[in-house]
Length: 162
Image 1 (cartoon, rainbow, N blue to C red):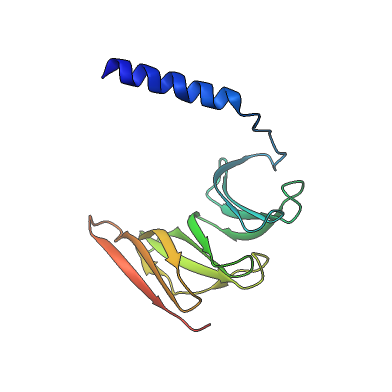
Image 2: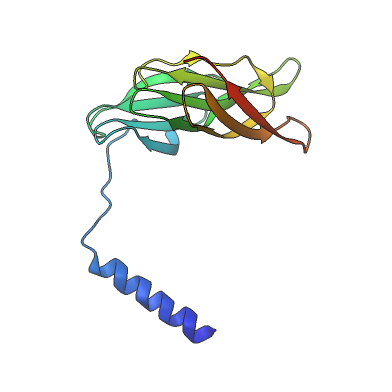
């Protein structure tokens, strides 16, 4: 087994070194912790962030392949956890926010139909965390998460209108 692992590592290193690809840094606003990235098209990129030393969650959009960024959504006392796009215009953004009264977390879903420039509430605030979302059409999808304060998971089925 040791030899197999050793040769697999050598193969992977050789494979990586043969490739001419490279990762290059992209300028981004300071004082944020980046957590997720989604390509909507070759030029349009959506990035989730959280302000450092703050509890505000932010969604940034670039329409020029990452040369410039604008905030398109924010939530105080919250965090964006995932997004899913059907195409370059229609997508959903999920996250959770803390409410001090009655001291609980609430998940939310937001929807865009203009490629991420504007986000509208697509659900009420519901107790718990939603971690993942997947849509198969503008009217059908599912989300998974966990009830706040409990070790109980849930699945949500979306039955929306287009």
